[in-house]
Length: 245
Image (cartoon, rainbow, N blue to C red; front, side, top):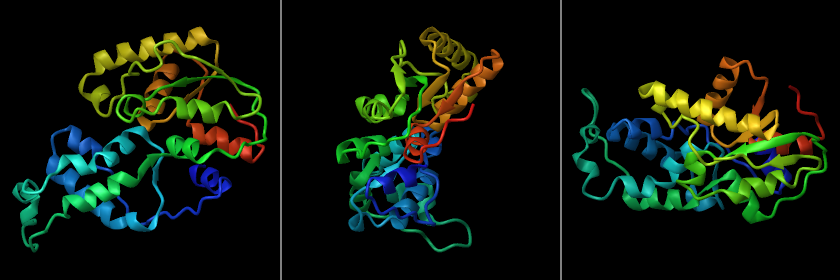
């Protein structure tokens, strides 16, 4: 859906096949060395000098990718355990911090990029009441809040109702829902209570963890909600297709 929306807006989309995990979960858990290995593989997979932007549609990943230029500094990388190489392998040399910084400078959330580009308005109507949850890694870490709303408001027929405490964490928070399940469940219940107050049956959010967390809580409480990414709705509007519950 993201690729199609970008193409509708005049973009050539290249998807490098050698890209890997962004490394966020590793880094959050204190595993800096494996995270740096993944970062360097991504820097090598994407030709930052040959594209206008490196697009990501998951808030948590985007936050990590934008921080590649901050996490590992010259002189530190060589002291990481994996810089010596695994047993039986030749030593591995980390990429320069400059390469990571050049990569990070091109990273954009897809909503941020499209809003800055100037969205070509879609024409397919989606006559539904929806509410938008601000993913923490998009609203707080990347400071991207209004851009997704601008895009969603361009969809004909869509009524966007503001969600109380929209930028309060849903409880997913990377691995937080695994390491602190009791608090994560309290946050999820609070989020769902706020969603109920809007009267919307359609919930939109820009992070995979949030999508899963809210969907799980809705199922646990027997709520029938449709939970989607903004690009899913834009894609349907461009293709003039209905959203199926």
